[in-house]
Length: 444
Image 1 (cartoon, one colour):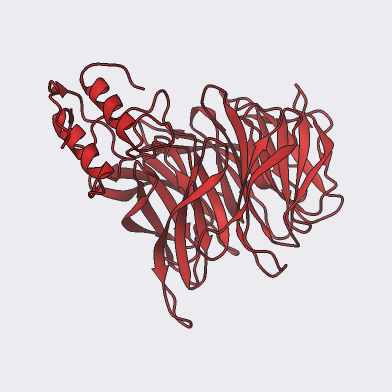
Image 2 (cartoon, rainbow, N blue to C red):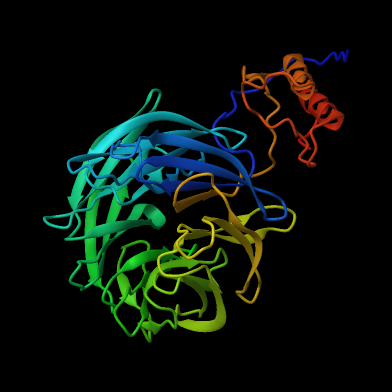
């Protein structure tokens, strides 16, 4: 038996909700089975399956508000996922609120109702969530909800008109919210709103027609100065590039706008973490094509493309920077169909300095139907160090006993990763590191 004497070191209560490692979360859009899959991003940029949390599953011929997990968003603090569902319901739909645990597992918390149909949902802040009310006829809307966490629930605080077909949201700097208004007849435009967190208000700032038929898959550069939209199926295939004043929310065309794309039916624009490249996803030929971003925001397509499959197989695309001694820029994307003879799944790849991608994981099976939308988490800011293993608010001898028990095969109800020193192994070295930290030493 291992015995330790450790002085009691009282620490403030530590957050027990957010993954302690970089992670990917996938909304799986199945008519009879909706779910959310969590994946861990490993140090080599590969992915490992953690859990597939079923939000609803029904027999053929039946329906449930928890199937068709369509859109997913992660709160800025990494604590909660919001998942919208797009089922056959015609009056109200479901938004699922799911807690993220330290080991990247998921716990379903509650199901809230929202008007049909929430084709997109996004966190604005840790306490404010916005959802679309997308309709094919009548006025579309965006709805702002306050999120209370104890107990967790949604309360509508504001609602604004959003054109005739608002299907996607994007969150910008200083509380800016962008909504695409892309009528089925064409004539795409972006609508801009500002959220006041203190007053919990939603104020329209104006709109701008894009130079493409549609305004699909909006993507902002991380520095918040450029907005790109995909032009959809009409030829010539083009991308709209706009500058953004983050103070006023005013949009203006980048010189040379719009810009061509050699892929068929551009549907999504995602900037690289360094704002040097734009990755454009296409619906018809299912390719991701790289464009360089000039200092003024102009685009130049590079001879770099990745082909996921045939029409409609390319799902969502996202990028993130994983911090570390050598930060890594990653691109994550999905193949959501099987009718081309390839499996569904999630891809991870490193973004090279020239804008090309280096695949690390290819079609990792989520264990679910149709992996559709993505949310990513780079990991906590600063050193990962939570010595309060038993989550009682103190770091002391009880936490060492807890870790020793877990390493010996015992239960781990708090689900904290026993690899405390992050060396890839759960062993005696982790016990030694924990003893050092609770005795007043620095994090490993």
